[in-house]
Amino acid sequence: MLERYTAPAIDGLARRFNIAPGHDAPIGEPVRLRRWGLLAPWRGHGGVRPPPIRTAPLDEIARTPVLARARRCVVYGDGWFAKAKLGKASHAWWIHGATGFAGLCTTHKDDGIEAFAIVVVPAPPELARFTDALPAGAWRDDGTPSPIAWRATEISRWFEDLAHDDERCIAPLANPAQGSLF
Image (cartoon, rainbow, N blue to C red; front, side, top):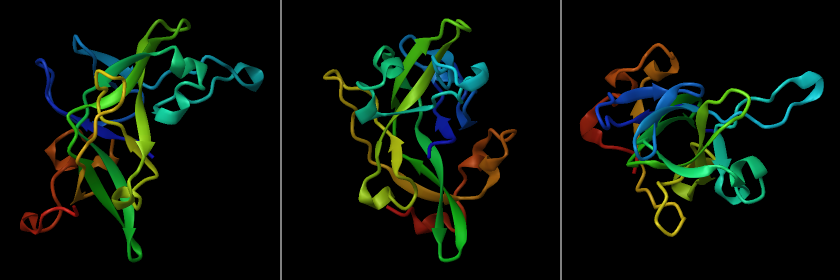
């Protein structure tokens, strides 16, 4: 599950090392900061709104009205965080290699704030131990996501604290000469 990601420096905006749902992050052309997480247009029992929509499965976009009505955008992201078990212990990983993710953005009438969701696709076999879905590459002119050559680097758990937004979030663990997983 995509819970946090990193973004490159772009158009005078500083590099981000720990973007979480609800944070403002760079999207689109022209580049602008917008909230990660679309407000659901429905309310449940007692008028309670469900959690924001932070990911949009590519194969669900056409069947989900709120996603189908949203505009395509690029989300400036270059990696995301995952955890995977190795033996009995859970290890943290920074999965990176993108230049941008496919996104959907819209403005909800209740709050007037433009927000976005990241489009996700099924994980290929080499990434299946980290997640079942991962960010799709930025939109191509034909409306399909571009491929991404992902790399995995084992990192510390520094990123787990939302107050941390610095290079230590993605610093390789152990001996950097060992390279990455793939």
